[in-house]
Image (cartoon, rainbow over all chains, first blue to last red):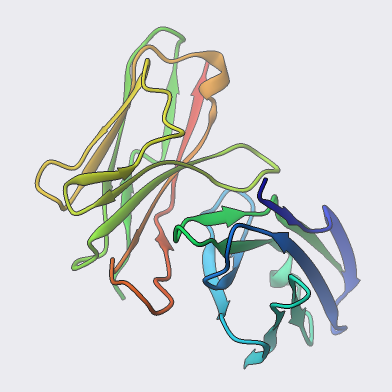
Length: 109
Length: 116
């Protein structure tokens, strides 16, 4: 079967750096997405990786290793507004998105 | 900035009643998705449209759920009759519908359904 694994919850301190990991086992691979979802709101697109390596976008970076079935989202200079769930999703060989359950990130002052 | 529109934002209904949700995708987006999301879980795809055609409805409980996108633009998702277990967030998303490339999905604000 297809599977996306992420930690259920993480806690970090304002101003610090946090890395959220995602491992996947899917039928084929056609890209990996990270979305941010604040409580009670819809997911918003953060990043897309299809080739190995690091994609940097401001305070957020996303890394992909296709051979290891692994990605991480790196958040720097954490702000209180970064408290949210972070969803990892992989597009499989049928171009369907397989979603993880999300990682709830709690930022403490 | 173009956005996906959804209505209503909140809906409270009694079990066995009918409910309907509406979605208007970003202009020019050929692909439209309806998802259901239960608290603490990732979105679950219910149905995917390419223009007016259903591409995937394998996870849609067809005995009570129906979806249509008659003119290939906006879409309606209906539940009849609603059951207690249908309480969830219903999300609509759209994407360009082009093969290759990122084909990023953009989400509307969602409809939070509570069935009593």
